[in-house]
Length: 110
Length: 115
Image 1: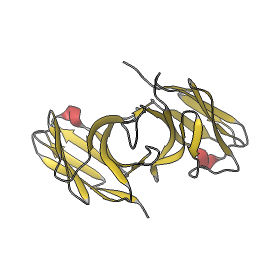
Image 2: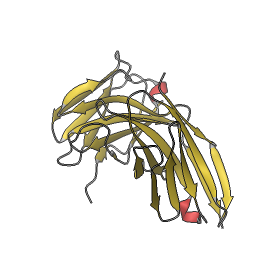
Image 3: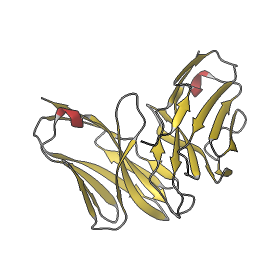
Image 4: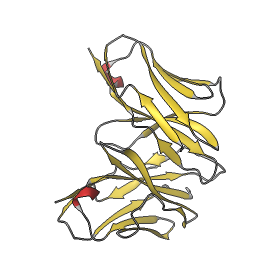
């Protein structure tokens, strides 16, 4: 069965304390690994897409990496405004749909 | 900024009532997705369309849920009759033309509470 699993479920960091979020996937016909950010009361907002093992993408304090079975979202020197739920999703070649993991709720305290 | 518009933003109804949620996708996008989000299940795919044709609705309870695209600017999700277990946030998302998986843009969601 196709599956996307994220860990940890919740992560509390002090401002400036770097860490990583994990996304493991088992998906046949994978076409892209997607990262989204979701703030309370809002819809998910696109961050990154990764297509090949070894690929990396960066945006401000975030860097996403991809292996054949996992993706990591590295957060360097986070700030309180980085607090949100981060969702990982696997894309299918057929139809363009995404299946999502449960998310990691990140809280960054000043 | 182009955005996906969903209405209503909030809906409180009683068990057994019909609920209709509407979505206006981004102009020019040809795929539309309906997702449901709960604390227990996370984001679940209910149904999706390409060029207004339904591609997959296997995630929907068929006896009470229906999804349609009357035209390219409107997608609807209906629940009849509604049940308390349908309480959730329903998201619509649209994607651009192209092959394979694409970046989806999500609406702000419709929060449904069924009493």
